[in-house]
Length: 221
Length: 221
DNA sequence: ACTTTTGCACTGACTAGTCAGTACAAAATA
DNA sequence: TATTTTGTACTGACTAGTCAGTGCAAAAGT
Image (cartoon, rainbow over all chains, first blue to last red; front, side):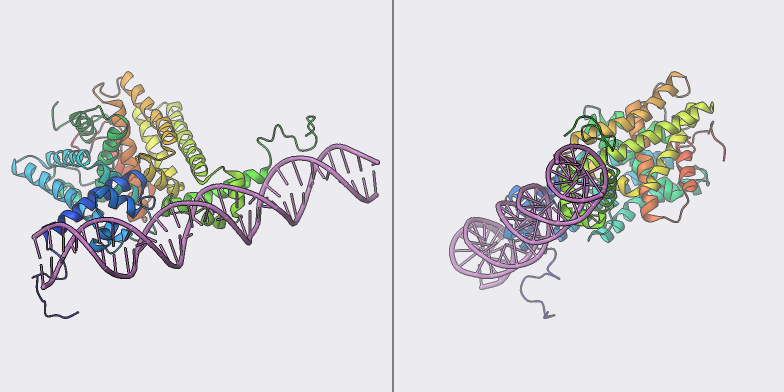
């Protein structure tokens, strides 16, 4: 509690040794797969430590508790996703494409993310709609960050006249996220032999209304 | 022990007492909300028994184990959903509507189901894509039953020339299910003030391609 | 009629085990 | 030297599953 910081230049105990950072990373990676497979409660701290190849005490040296480890893991993962979506939307914008192209680019970015971090995605989906859990508020916040990116692009498309202003932006954003999420998880779990392009193509079809009987205006193949 | 059935018509001890059936129903109801809120492992058998208003022993009198209770609960719930989807598709068919109308009717049936059994839906989503769990195979089976209903309607639509034969039926079915599932769960969790009609309308927009820029051919308001 | 037996449904105290978190001295690292 | 990690041992709260026994209503026996 002494304000006068002492030796290693450091604020609040954050951002320091690469070593510690590496340990935390190993713990994230161990925890994410185990929790995705078994769930939070069924995963023991001993298992996490063993899989990460560190001593149990190290877990508690780096994280205040099992729950805190999990919460920071959630923040970390959703941060990656949000950055990836924003990036995809921006790239598509720079290439001068339409907002619908940006949407399509975000769908692909979502698929790539899920392909790369399937365990994190599983775990996120499994926890998102629960109530009465300690990290509920954390989840609501990070969820909103990710969904906001999609909503932003939809809003831009409506304002630019590309999409009907009749669409309900929050609901449509949620539906789009769900479409990608569930299609991707099903792909991984039940038809892993399909390629990412296959899955992307199927979702583009849906987005562009060729399923519901509409005439496609965007995209070709 | 006497084979000649006597008073309460009963064979072999199966399908009998309303009392037992009622107890099992109470246990289902208690378990579904608790597990939806907390997850399987974090929910104790004592909690389930208490919420159901029975003694712990009764749980084990009626179910071989906690896992078995959960598995039977899953079967029970997905059975209800599947029946509801089939029913909706059939009604729409009888009214002479198109297959796309049947799809729309199924979306609504899905929403109604989730509205009625939100806890079951949460729990189902949370467990579906996990690996290494005892009831994994049970889940795969019941999932397939439900998805098959959607795939059937899509197949019919393609055969009838209503939908392009370029669509990938399994992937599209998964995406549609995901769209409904996630939109509905988000609705319940984050904007519960919206009406079912609002949500349905937003999803119909998506299905009919008015989001992706296509021309709507089906549906009106 | 009456007593006794049967079997189902349920009870709740109890057991054997599990697991998050702690303690701490010694070692490794930077 | 200061920080970080290790290894081992420990505690105490919590939990899945067990089991001897209760209550009761309908049969069977007399």
